[in-house]
Structures are given as structure tokens and as C-alpha cells.
Image (cartoon, rainbow, N blue to C red; front, side):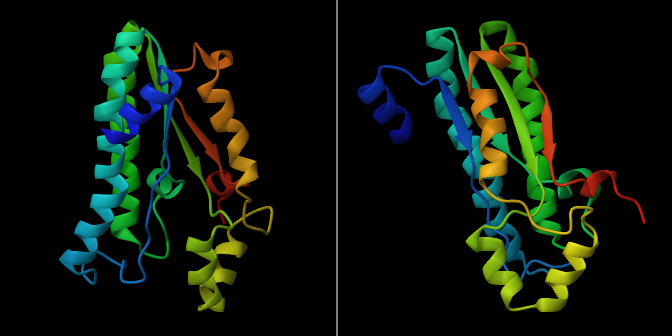
Length: 186
């Protein structure tokens, strides 16, 4: 709520909301091995954060008659993860479901909602974890046709497009930007 108030006080409106929050704790494994506190923490950040951003930005966008919401999900929400991270995977699936629901509810009133589902991106979150586990890093690289992780700047342009009027007829879409992981079967 404070974020939206600050944006309106500073800029007079909210044209775009970029919901990019996510955690992937080391304690997130298979559902049978993940403790409830880890599950709840992942859901609180990855789902509740997106919910709250949308809850407070959408009324402002409706008042303005326009706006674009961009929710960051993940490729694992589409195909699952062979290295179990069940809380993270479920949380990003929830983000995709919420994105579709909001796209249907609010497009007719000028507010679009889309998602970006990145593959593994070279962020401190991922790299700090993988630096501790070379086998996990190599397992992930082997499943990517490009043989590397993505870079944050390779995701940014999709967000800029979705925030802009160039995408005014794009609604309910999920942009998968993963180096080809989701199309690779072996």
C-alpha cells in the first residue's frame, strides 16, 4: 500500500507493477522433506508478495483507466523440477494462476496482467546456492540447450515490452525465457 501511495505522490500514477520477488531456500526439497516453516516462508514471499502488490496497485490502475502488471513466475511452474523444490515450484504455479485470473477480471477495465517465466538466471540467489553444490550446477546446465544460465538483462526487455503501450493487446500471456529448457526433452 505504501509503495503505491509513494508512486502516486511522486509520479501522479502507477503505469506498471513489476512483481519480482522470490526466495528459494536450501531447505526446500521434496514435499515430504520440506518442513512447514520453509513452505510457509516461500509462500509468504513468493505468493503473498505478488498478491499484495496487485491488491494495492490494481485499484489505482482502475481509477486511471489503465495499467500493466508483470508477475515473475518461473519455468518450473510449467514443467516441474527434476531437482525437487516443491515450495518454490508451487509458489510460482500460484503466481501463474493469479496472473491468468487477474488478466480475465481486469482487462476490460484497462488493466492488463502478464507473466514472465525465466529459466535459471545468474542472480546472487541462484549463484550463491550453486557455488556450494557443483553437482547441482552441472545438473542444471546439462538440461539447458544453451549450456549456460541466463543473465538478468536478458529478461529485462520482456518486462519493458509488457510495461509499455506496445503490448496493449497482450494480456494473460506467459513469456517463457529459459534458453530452451522447456522445449528440451532428453
